[in-house]
Image (cartoon, rainbow, N blue to C red; front, side, top):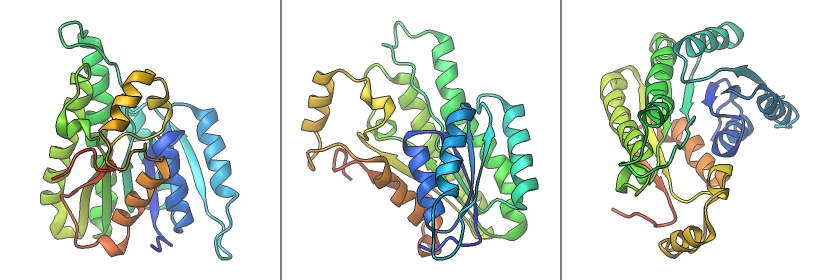
Length: 252
């Protein structure tokens, strides 16, 4: 999967799946713009990428501290990316949060925060990236959804709704811009070992693993490999698709 000459933007790139995606895209040859709120963590990821060796080429990554809940932050960051790199070829909408609570007890602020970060921010980032992609008549948008956006999850009505909405957004964008050689797909991870899942109770972890035919949690790098494939020319005839990376937790 050769992404040489491509410029990728990855949101939520400071840790977990976002960090793994940024590293994988860089190893495939892409220049990577890293977006997240934590500047210190972003800089660490940028330094890691810039220290990679790839067949004589030096990978290039730059960090852009931005809160994707804030539309002005998004606009400023994407303007800076285009100014620094000249274009945007690939967008990975990965930024996401949880604010878990039973729906009868869920506060409106927790609903809004999750939907704004997980869904609205993806729409705003896609808007900013598409202006560059439409000009060059080439682009890849990859939205990181979740198995719980497909099957629901008790205590996560806000998260499940935001991730289900992301699937609908993926298909709508795919239909709107497909004629311009721009694809839009989603990757739906299952139980992946990240900071977000590390705080789960042991009983819940055991129950989750029991529902996975492969009998293990996934790694962020396994999600990143799927993202790199969808970003490549090898996936040129795939759009509006949800790629499940869940160990068989959900089939069909």
